[in-house]
View 1 (cartoon, helix red, strand yellow):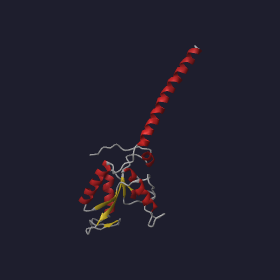
View 2 (tube, one colour):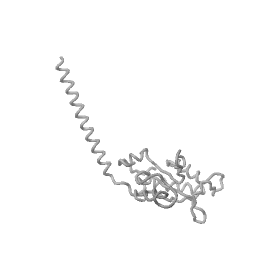
View 3 (cartoon, one colour):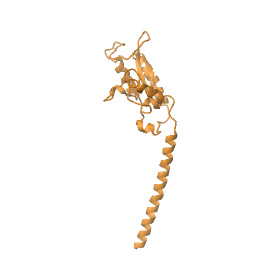
Length: 185
């Protein structure tokens, strides 16, 4: 009886070992495939669609916006990060290349366009004269569309910034994870 238990124990361990080996092999293959994925080179289709909806809905509310930034390459991100550090100007981002949702096509920035065509970043402006700052109206519309607004962040407030992370962290994006490439209704 003791020998039979030993045989079953060894057989059990062997089977567990085989399944563990197969799982590890698959995990290594998946990680290698993700690591080999190229970085996106434009806005994700869902973000692009929601950007267009945001522009239209803001216009319906009497607010003209301009999308000032969307996809950024890692190199562009590094240049912006250098501003206020190794280059002249004010610090506008704390994200280096590869650390911004812009680098994965999942973020946009906006500003308000005035009737004369000029652009402002005045978060208190009430151009449609409804008693509420246009900036916050646009942010609310964006949030209804599924964007996260940088003005809601606890630390550094990035008022022009809107992003859709699809539940992915920057670390996961760096590891090659990507949202599904389907356009939402």
